[in-house]
Length: 418
Image 1 (cartoon, rainbow, N blue to C red):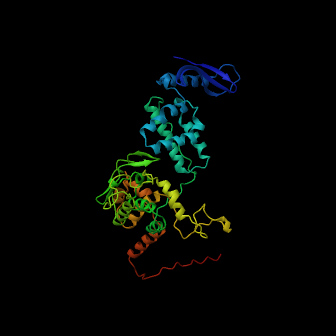
Image 2: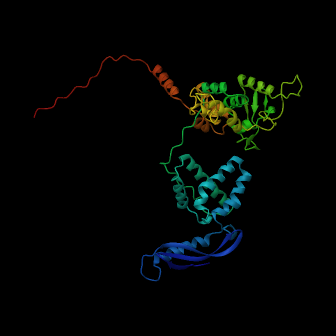
């Protein structure tokens, strides 16, 4: 039981004591100083309030039960415990995202902070500092959730005690609002399909008419397409195969006739030259493959096939980057071509288009395989200006018409003469 030694350094009072800490994997006894407050008296001896502050701080030190080998900095905890843990227990894309947030936003601010000493005002200071970079509100909320997850695991592994310091922090309400996400309409889907080549068109049709995520499309196999359904069984991210995102994501999705016909034509195009002449194409194996027979990356299809087809010069009709500058003209995109808004715009588009057709929210949730219907209604059903006008027209047509028997006209009150 240490009482600590109160010392004056510069303009502040400190209490000094010994503490076991983990330094690069070795438990060492270290002399620690904690600031108690500013010097406000002329005497050499600390005033009563400084003594009380020292006693209060030492009581918290005596009450801690964290073993010396777990007293470490936030940076060492991340490298030796947290990042290896999420790599083992989380999806590869999630682990990569958390590691990027640590590397680019948190590590420069707090890698040297002692984990057990972090409090809410420290975390709030980190968030305030990160907000100065002009990040959007949603990005800041995501960073806050990562900090919360870090301290949650730290408590579970006995590296931290007390309430999670991220709990009562707040994101700057003046931060940039997130940009509105996009959803393809039926017309845009048809226009894109008319301009992009195969097999990109079939892959895009799968995204637009089933709502599968990009990783789920890359993971499709011919065995998954049967009985008028596509069974979602796997997902691929950066070449790594994992299970579907959630338990509800591992479900069959009905295939409409138009998409089924596209897939059968795509199967015939995948037929090998040395195969049985009566064969209708492959029955097993990846649905979308490269010339080498390996899985086709959807992002590679995007860069090599889709974007060159949609981003063409209005003058020479060549893709961006191949525009012939010798003809003395600058590249200007052909505005008559549909624009690309991302693979996920297909998933949002399917939800929005089904909603316009009168499909109930719960059914759309089942088709998109969301865990909660609130996700479907909050992020995957987009209302256009035409939807709003149509709704008000329906209201207008249902309001009963009445004849006004009398018209009330306010009378002007003449001012009194003085």
